Length: 225
Image (cartoon, rainbow, N blue to C red):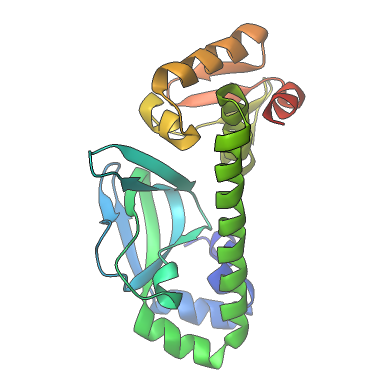
Protein backbone atom coordinates (compact mmCIF):
# COMPACT_ATOMS: atom_id res chain seq x y z
CA UNK A 1 0.00 0.00 0.00
CA UNK A 2 1.39 3.38 -1.03
CA UNK A 3 1.57 5.44 2.19
CA UNK A 4 1.76 8.77 0.29
CA UNK A 5 -1.49 8.04 -1.53
CA UNK A 6 -3.28 6.93 1.65
CA UNK A 7 -2.21 10.10 3.48
CA UNK A 8 -3.92 12.28 0.85
CA UNK A 9 -7.36 11.08 2.00
CA UNK A 10 -9.17 13.30 4.55
CA UNK A 11 -9.46 10.29 6.86
CA UNK A 12 -5.66 10.18 7.24
CA UNK A 13 -4.35 13.67 6.47
CA UNK A 14 -4.66 14.93 10.07
CA UNK A 15 -2.87 11.90 11.57
CA UNK A 16 0.77 11.21 12.33
CA UNK A 17 2.42 8.36 10.45
CA UNK A 18 2.16 5.84 13.27
CA UNK A 19 -1.55 6.43 13.89
CA UNK A 20 -2.30 6.46 10.16
CA UNK A 21 -0.46 3.17 9.75
CA UNK A 22 -2.46 1.52 12.55
CA UNK A 23 -5.73 2.75 11.09
CA UNK A 24 -4.85 1.63 7.55
CA UNK A 25 -3.83 -1.83 8.77
CA UNK A 26 -7.21 -2.20 10.51
CA UNK A 27 -9.14 -1.52 7.29
CA UNK A 28 -10.35 -4.15 4.84
CA UNK A 29 -8.58 -4.33 1.45
CA UNK A 30 -10.51 -4.85 -1.80
CA UNK A 31 -9.62 -5.28 -5.46
CA UNK A 32 -12.23 -5.14 -8.21
CA UNK A 33 -12.11 -5.13 -12.02
CA UNK A 34 -13.73 -2.65 -14.42
CA UNK A 35 -17.52 -2.81 -14.33
CA UNK A 36 -17.75 -4.41 -10.90
CA UNK A 37 -19.93 -2.71 -8.30
CA UNK A 38 -18.70 -1.53 -4.90
CA UNK A 39 -22.23 -0.69 -3.70
CA UNK A 40 -25.55 0.14 -5.29
CA UNK A 41 -27.97 3.01 -4.89
CA UNK A 42 -30.35 2.05 -2.07
CA UNK A 43 -27.90 -0.28 -0.29
CA UNK A 44 -27.32 0.32 3.43
CA UNK A 45 -24.61 2.91 3.99
CA UNK A 46 -22.36 1.14 6.45
CA UNK A 47 -18.77 1.81 5.32
CA UNK A 48 -16.47 4.37 3.75
CA UNK A 49 -13.81 3.64 1.15
CA UNK A 50 -10.41 5.09 0.19
CA UNK A 51 -9.12 4.53 -3.34
CA UNK A 52 -5.53 3.25 -3.47
CA UNK A 53 -5.24 2.70 -7.23
CA UNK A 54 -7.49 2.77 -10.28
CA UNK A 55 -10.66 4.79 -10.70
CA UNK A 56 -14.22 4.57 -9.35
CA UNK A 57 -17.28 6.38 -10.68
CA UNK A 58 -20.34 7.42 -8.68
CA UNK A 59 -23.61 7.57 -10.60
CA UNK A 60 -27.36 7.77 -10.12
CA UNK A 61 -30.09 6.20 -12.25
CA UNK A 62 -33.41 7.87 -13.08
CA UNK A 63 -36.75 6.09 -13.01
CA UNK A 64 -36.63 5.57 -16.78
CA UNK A 65 -33.17 4.00 -16.64
CA UNK A 66 -31.03 6.97 -17.64
CA UNK A 67 -27.70 7.24 -15.82
CA UNK A 68 -26.09 10.40 -14.51
CA UNK A 69 -22.37 10.22 -13.75
CA UNK A 70 -21.74 12.31 -10.65
CA UNK A 71 -18.00 11.94 -10.10
CA UNK A 72 -14.89 10.04 -11.07
CA UNK A 73 -12.57 9.33 -8.14
CA UNK A 74 -8.94 8.23 -8.13
CA UNK A 75 -6.07 7.40 -5.77
CA UNK A 76 -6.20 9.19 -2.44
CA UNK A 77 -9.87 10.10 -2.76
CA UNK A 78 -12.62 8.87 -0.45
CA UNK A 79 -16.25 7.94 -1.01
CA UNK A 80 -19.18 6.52 0.92
CA UNK A 81 -18.49 8.68 3.98
CA UNK A 82 -21.77 10.62 3.77
CA UNK A 83 -23.60 7.75 5.49
CA UNK A 84 -21.52 8.33 8.63
CA UNK A 85 -22.99 11.81 9.11
CA UNK A 86 -26.39 11.15 7.51
CA UNK A 87 -27.35 7.48 8.09
CA UNK A 88 -29.54 6.02 5.38
CA UNK A 89 -29.42 4.16 2.09
CA UNK A 90 -26.75 4.91 -0.49
CA UNK A 91 -27.65 7.79 -2.80
CA UNK A 92 -25.48 6.58 -5.68
CA UNK A 93 -23.94 3.48 -7.21
CA UNK A 94 -20.16 3.05 -7.17
CA UNK A 95 -18.72 1.26 -10.23
CA UNK A 96 -15.08 0.46 -10.92
CA UNK A 97 -13.86 2.30 -14.04
CA UNK A 98 -10.44 0.63 -14.17
CA UNK A 99 -9.09 -2.19 -11.99
CA UNK A 100 -9.08 -0.61 -8.56
CA UNK A 101 -7.66 -1.30 -5.13
CA UNK A 102 -9.22 0.34 -2.11
CA UNK A 103 -9.62 -0.08 1.61
CA UNK A 104 -12.82 0.20 3.63
CA UNK A 105 -13.82 0.84 7.22
CA UNK A 106 -17.21 0.16 8.79
CA UNK A 107 -19.08 3.08 10.34
CA UNK A 108 -19.14 1.54 13.83
CA UNK A 109 -15.34 1.21 13.89
CA UNK A 110 -14.98 4.68 12.40
CA UNK A 111 -17.17 6.29 15.07
CA UNK A 112 -15.00 4.76 17.80
CA UNK A 113 -11.89 6.05 16.06
CA UNK A 114 -13.32 9.56 15.66
CA UNK A 115 -14.18 9.69 19.36
CA UNK A 116 -10.43 9.51 20.07
CA UNK A 117 -9.39 11.65 17.08
CA UNK A 118 -11.96 14.47 16.65
CA UNK A 119 -9.56 16.37 14.39
CA UNK A 120 -10.14 13.69 11.74
CA UNK A 121 -13.88 14.42 11.76
CA UNK A 122 -13.10 18.06 10.92
CA UNK A 123 -10.93 16.94 7.99
CA UNK A 124 -13.69 14.68 6.73
CA UNK A 125 -16.25 17.49 6.96
CA UNK A 126 -13.86 19.74 5.06
CA UNK A 127 -13.65 17.06 2.36
CA UNK A 128 -17.45 16.87 2.17
CA UNK A 129 -17.66 20.66 1.96
CA UNK A 130 -15.18 20.64 -0.94
CA UNK A 131 -17.27 18.03 -2.74
CA UNK A 132 -20.44 20.08 -2.13
CA UNK A 133 -18.70 23.15 -3.56
CA UNK A 134 -17.83 21.20 -6.71
CA UNK A 135 -21.41 19.95 -6.96
CA UNK A 136 -22.75 23.50 -6.72
CA UNK A 137 -20.30 24.63 -9.40
CA UNK A 138 -21.51 21.79 -11.61
CA UNK A 139 -25.13 22.84 -11.18
CA UNK A 140 -24.22 26.44 -12.06
CA UNK A 141 -22.34 25.25 -15.14
CA UNK A 142 -25.42 23.36 -16.36
CA UNK A 143 -27.39 26.61 -16.20
CA UNK A 144 -24.85 29.20 -17.31
CA UNK A 145 -22.20 27.40 -19.40
CA UNK A 146 -22.64 25.93 -22.87
CA UNK A 147 -21.64 22.35 -23.65
CA UNK A 148 -18.20 23.14 -25.15
CA UNK A 149 -17.39 25.18 -22.04
CA UNK A 150 -18.45 22.31 -19.79
CA UNK A 151 -16.38 19.86 -21.83
CA UNK A 152 -13.32 22.10 -21.52
CA UNK A 153 -13.84 22.41 -17.78
CA UNK A 154 -14.26 18.64 -17.37
CA UNK A 155 -11.05 17.97 -19.31
CA UNK A 156 -9.13 20.44 -17.15
CA UNK A 157 -10.50 18.86 -13.96
CA UNK A 158 -9.59 15.35 -15.13
CA UNK A 159 -6.14 16.59 -16.14
CA UNK A 160 -5.55 18.16 -12.73
CA UNK A 161 -6.35 14.91 -10.94
CA UNK A 162 -5.24 12.23 -13.40
CA UNK A 163 -3.03 13.98 -15.95
CA UNK A 164 0.59 13.13 -16.71
CA UNK A 165 2.86 15.57 -18.51
CA UNK A 166 4.52 14.23 -21.66
CA UNK A 167 6.62 15.82 -24.40
CA UNK A 168 3.42 16.48 -26.37
CA UNK A 169 1.20 17.85 -23.61
CA UNK A 170 -0.80 16.64 -20.62
CA UNK A 171 -1.97 13.06 -21.17
CA UNK A 172 -5.24 12.26 -19.42
CA UNK A 173 -6.04 8.54 -19.40
CA UNK A 174 -9.57 9.08 -18.11
CA UNK A 175 -10.66 5.54 -19.15
CA UNK A 176 -14.24 6.70 -19.69
CA UNK A 177 -16.40 5.67 -22.62
CA UNK A 178 -17.90 8.39 -24.82
CA UNK A 179 -21.23 7.86 -23.08
CA UNK A 180 -19.68 8.16 -19.61
CA UNK A 181 -17.86 11.36 -20.60
CA UNK A 182 -21.15 12.78 -21.89
CA UNK A 183 -22.88 11.86 -18.61
CA UNK A 184 -20.12 13.61 -16.66
CA UNK A 185 -20.70 16.80 -18.66
CA UNK A 186 -24.50 16.51 -18.59
CA UNK A 187 -25.05 16.50 -22.35
CA UNK A 188 -25.70 14.10 -25.20
CA UNK A 189 -22.85 11.99 -26.55
CA UNK A 190 -23.25 13.57 -29.99
CA UNK A 191 -22.93 17.12 -28.63
CA UNK A 192 -19.89 16.25 -26.51
CA UNK A 193 -18.21 14.45 -29.43
CA UNK A 194 -18.81 17.51 -31.61
CA UNK A 195 -17.15 19.73 -29.01
CA UNK A 196 -14.16 17.38 -28.70
CA UNK A 197 -13.79 17.22 -32.49
CA UNK A 198 -13.82 21.02 -32.63
CA UNK A 199 -11.13 21.24 -29.93
CA UNK A 200 -9.02 18.71 -31.86
CA UNK A 201 -9.50 20.67 -35.10
CA UNK A 202 -8.29 23.83 -33.37
CA UNK A 203 -5.20 22.00 -32.08
CA UNK A 204 -6.17 22.27 -28.43
CA UNK A 205 -6.38 18.51 -27.79
CA UNK A 206 -5.40 15.21 -29.34
CA UNK A 207 -7.99 12.44 -28.93
CA UNK A 208 -7.20 8.82 -28.10
CA UNK A 209 -9.05 5.69 -27.01
CA UNK A 210 -10.43 6.55 -23.55
CA UNK A 211 -7.78 9.26 -23.27
CA UNK A 212 -7.06 12.79 -24.38
CA UNK A 213 -3.88 14.85 -24.53
CA UNK A 214 -4.24 18.53 -23.71
CA UNK A 215 -2.07 20.46 -26.15
CA UNK A 216 -3.15 24.03 -25.33
CA UNK A 217 -4.24 24.29 -21.71
CA UNK A 218 -4.50 28.10 -21.80
CA UNK A 219 -7.04 28.04 -24.65
CA UNK A 220 -9.07 25.39 -22.84
CA UNK A 221 -9.07 27.48 -19.66
CA UNK A 222 -10.36 30.49 -21.57
CA UNK A 223 -13.07 28.35 -23.20
CA UNK A 224 -14.10 26.93 -19.82
CA UNK A 225 -14.91 30.38 -18.38
